[in-house]
Length: 430
Image (cartoon, rainbow, N blue to C red):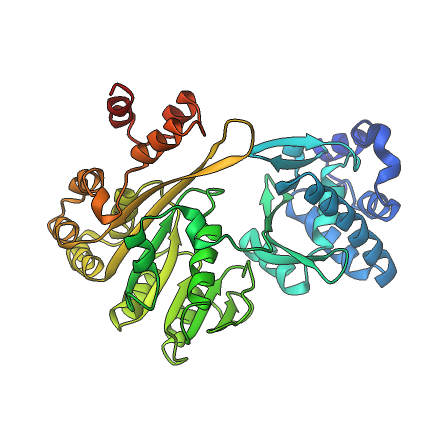
């Protein structure tokens, strides 16, 4: 803990500015949050303030903790009525407000009061169980799932991350849709749809690529749901956290949450080999250990789906290979070429009239694409997609041009979202 009697510096200044941050909305925030935050000694700085707040939260009577939770539930219900996808709060960067992302734009909302960073810390810590609080302190970040019961028997689930920002605690939560898009709504070529279905192609690795907020999870759930309804088998879903919960239909669908049911993606993949799966879904491949495990289980004859934080098919291939030391890359390149079946790289672009529309790039690994990977000529793959329409392939620029011709997006949007602006301009000049 911080030493007593030292110059309080900015900590006391933050305490003195509490009144100005609270402003006219003070009545909205539960008094217990104010009172507990005010107990934090001004001499404590950095993580010592968070540790002290965590101890105080743990000592709160159950009724007080429930009051704080109910307040947060009201905030989240308001988020849902606005159709927001994300909620952000905590730390000095939020300027005392709760922020929501609605149709791609993130803005502060003031209906639920103004907070000091300490008050945000109390609110966030109250959402975490003992294990999550320990992980937050150890790793400076913790992922968890959050469930909110609403009217009737419906429950809305969220993917949440609590983390440190400049020695203060912040939170992001993303709403997980409680319905699944039909696979047909992704507007994929018939050959690609068939390739994603276990009935037609029983092995191989498919990567859903995109940056944060590009709808990768939605696409992955559409693929899982379609297979769940199409063949009698076993699907194992590994996530951190688990987002959409699929109800077993023709398939039995097992959900295993990393950090809750299994220690890591790598362990979950290895353990699934002994669980008789037909399809293994890996929420994300983040490191060489997870990538190697994914390649191994695919190589053993399973059908595997995963996601990757990249913006194009070529970048996805390069990123996987680059995760390994130089002397191992040739071996990985050959192994990846043998098991990779499909890469779908996607973005969500602003739609004319409001909302967002899916833009995608699709690579199907034919013999030419496999040879390009093995020969360390991944740069040739873009041209293969450009010319591979008959096989279901398409570049992001071709899909942007299609949406532009349909009147769904503007020229500025197409140019802003293109990976290869030169190729898009070629299409625009036609």
